[in-house]
Image 1 (cartoon, helix red, strand yellow):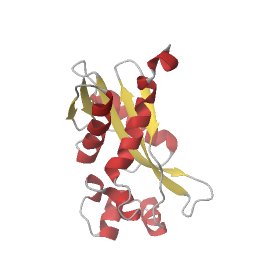
Image 2 (cartoon, rainbow, N blue to C red):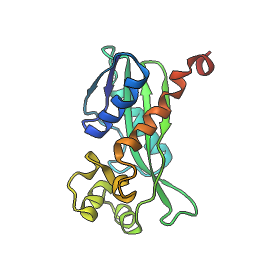
Image 3 (cartoon, helix red, strand yellow):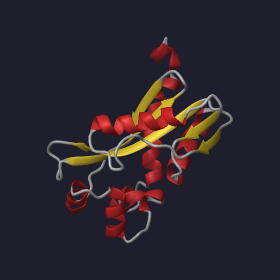
Length: 175
């Protein structure tokens, strides 16, 4: 099974490989940088999901069985502290159909959301807050905020696995 991940982020590559090698007997995963077609800091469900789909479709070629697009974004959530939660969406494309999955969501501290709404990217703000350069390509903000109980690889694995659910159960999803 040949898979391409639409990102050079090592976390996204590792998370995809970790999940797909549990599903398929032989997996070869490559990464390629592609444009998501959405703002660097997606805000809103439609924009974030579209970014994941665009990534998966833009990286797909007949050389691969599946392409994987992963996009993190802020979604408005009523009754939350800041009004937003971060969720990662995964789109998996096989040249015909898209399947989607989402990770567990979490809330950033108010000072992060204030700066993001002012035009900064979450990753840049969290790098400043934690003092860790390129935190999102390492353990991630979720690791910092959960005190190491969940890292970004594990959080990303969630959305990849959820996007695979219909593919793991093709008979009841696609008849």
